[in-house]
Amino acid sequence: MGVDYYNILKVNRNATEDDLKKSYKRLAMRWHPDKNPDIKKREAEAKFKQISEAYDVLSDPQKRQIYDAYGEEALKSGNVPPPPSAGASHFRFHPRDADDIFAEFFGASDGVGGGRGRGFGETFGRNPYTDAASHQPRKIPPVEKNLSFSLEELYSGSKRKMKISRTVLDAYGKPTTVEEILIIDIKPGWKKGTKITFPEKGNQDPGTIAGDLIFLVDEKPHATYKRDGNDLLINQKVSLMDALTGMTLNLTMLDGRLLTIPVTDIVKTGDEMVVENEGMPISKERGKKGNLRILFDVKFPSRLTAEQKSDLRRVLGRS
Image (cartoon, rainbow, N blue to C red):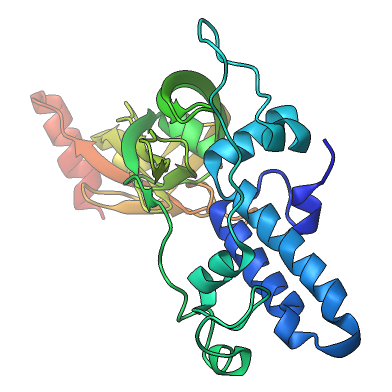
């Protein structure tokens, strides 16, 4: 591949636009010739030009794509294989001047190419991170899509593959449709409204940066349980006899476990029983869960015989 632009700019091959900017700012500040006078002047000039060329290539989607696919020699010679069903390639490499790139970030200075405006000391007296000129391509607004998960999936966590189709620019700057498989990794305890962001996986128009693709977690209704924050709620109907004499509840939890809960106290409609640490996992506190809250609804008999009424008066009258 020849020159390793990623190594020169101290970034990895998946570096984003922000990564490139931060690295360029840091290295340009360090190696600007005006900051390295006398003995380091020649070394600084060469290093400064390398840094600028690396940023020029990697920050340009078309140049970067050609460089990644065919290397530095093909990029600079223009000897790039044409796309299918096309004629000879018309790509030509036009490197940007190092001082022009530097001026976009920090304003004009007396740089490598000679005096063009303010001197180095005046330029660097300002904060380069707040005074940088804004000449970057516009980023497409993000696309948000709802993605529904069952309460069981949100309890235990899950992975889901999503096939997406989007418009991007090819090596020649022309829009083309590509398909990708995204892996969505749901963590136990994630709530409705949680955002899963895939940076720059949206559509791209000429002269722009691709937008982000955002999935919003949604919850499917559950037949037995209802979620309330980190708690799980269940409405439990019980007979009058069980409400008065006690019972044992057998509940199937979201992970398939059978939970046996003895109820020894008398309960009435509206009473709530709390079972600690049997709710939803708390995503930010590993190993911890919310509570299971059982809401009782006592079902009264529709009619009683005379004998049953007599027995009840006799038993309850003694209490």
